[in-house]
Amino acid sequence: MRILVTGGAGFIGSNFVHHLIDETEHSVTVLDKLTYAGNLASLDSLPAERFSFVRGDIGDASLVERLFGEHDAVVHYAAESHNDNSLDDPRPFLDTNIIGTFTLLEAARKTGVRFHHISTDEVYGDLELDDPGRFTENTPYNPSSPYSSTKAGSDLLVRAWVRSFGVKATISNCSNNYGPYQHVEKFIPRQITNVLRGERPKLYGTGENVRDWIHADDHSSAVLTILERGAIGETYLIGADGEKNNREVVELILTELDQPWDAYDLVTDRPGHDLRYAIDSSRLRTELGWTPRYSDFAAGLADTIAWYRSNEAWWAPQKDATEARYISQGR
Ligand code: NAD
Ligand code: TDX
Picture 1 (tube, protein in one colour):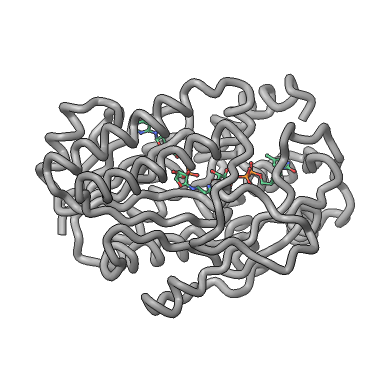
Picture 2 (cartoon, helix red, strand yellow; picture 1 turned 60 degrees about the vertical axis):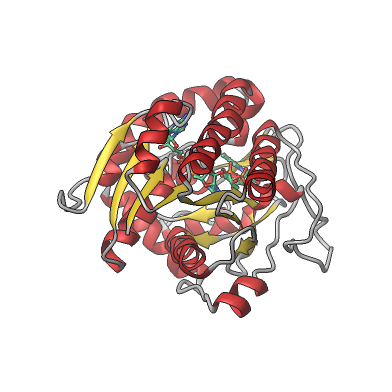
């Protein structure tokens, strides 16, 4: 197959491209605008006979329609992805996440090309710490932030284009990813690179918020499974039973980097901060037979720490500007 990957120069998209090149025979084109979050260095040394890159905006209808016509399937990762940025300036989130996804859906409608939409568990809002339940495919949408509300809107567009126009689409909603090539604005890379630079990790609020962590390579294998065997029009939740509170994660990072486990700072909380996410991925496991490979979070985190230690040239150019922005927000 020839697969078009939108947002393939970002964190999860680039992990998916590496997964496709390493584990399949498919050829891959990345369409990416190279915003502050896109990094061509994440796609270095891929084989030219199976990989090509197009710089462009998913909101560019003529470009998008031409590229759909040249591919057998499209996997859509491109997004504005950071909650804190969406609180500062929501507009780019509407442009890319809503109008960009609409533009892709129109191209899917015209060309009939198979489309997979990547989304997030944040569309379901949050859970109490002691809630025995987890999110399922039937949980009602209840997003909290400008970011998650635009992702929720994009999911609903996909559902409507399937029902009204017969677009051949599937949707996946995944929990928090960690692994190589994640921008230093995000929680885990921010704390790892802080410690590597001799700075203290910064925990929002009390550090009690819970995220359900999955390695990006497990997200990739799940998406490939859905692309190959998912039922058109269906939604699959992706998660690896990785619930941890933020304090536990920071303590693991500090310990792995030979620092005192409590050498972190509590900083101003994120407005509207979701308390807990938790995914029940039974449907994907039982209906499509998927299982994650990274069952030990501490081991996956240690690999990720080793990657950031060895790849300072990849992250250092973004670090100062990212921290300056956080400091101006008191975080
Ligand atoms: P990211 O911010 O690292 O990467 C986004 C990529 O999209 C960048 O390369 C950027 O240049 C590109 N992009 C942005 N706007 C574009 C546009 N208008 N046209 C073309 N390219 C554009 O994001 P990520 O963390 O890799 O997330 C990828 C997808 O996965 C998003 O849809 C996100 O909602 C979803 N997701 C992320 C997580 C997570 O934990 N990070 C979890 C679940 C779902
Ligand atoms: O410095 C920090 N300190 C801190 O305590 C940062 C950057 C974050 N946090 C907290 C906020 C969250 O509880 O850590 C947790 C994770 O934060 P983020 O990495 O910003 O992720 P989150 O807001 O949970 O959203 C992520 O997962 C779902 C991705 O960024 C989204 O794109 C995805 O949809």
